[in-house]
Figure 1: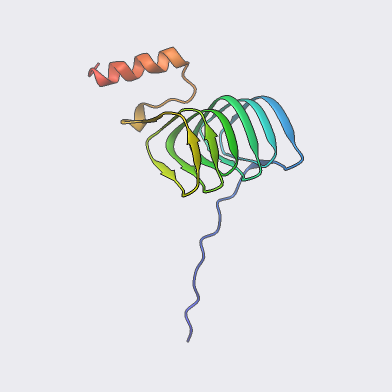
Figure 2 (figure 1 turned 180 degrees about the vertical axis):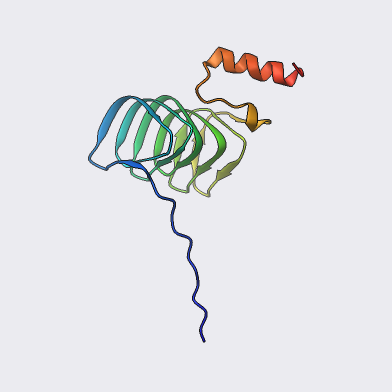
Length: 141
């Protein structure tokens, strides 16, 4: 009897901004979001963000648990769990994550900082408060 190969189903995406969609503003979400069109603004999430290969994102800041980039991103990315740049990705900005995967052919211009203690990461904390909390954690407070 031939064995059937189980293929892993792609994770479900709660919301999709389609190819013809252009959105400007602040996005906050808990589950997952796929961007296939254009976005400008800021993204704060505890969920998964997928930026498709034809998407263009101009963000002051992107914060999410997990980020997969296949398109063009101008702006800083903070990913609590992991950041993956697919071979088609072009990222112009600094990245901060606990796990990083960069595919062959990626264009990445920026700095990379690895998060040492992902449990102390709070994507909704204000920039200064977050930095102070991490500094206190480093000093054992």
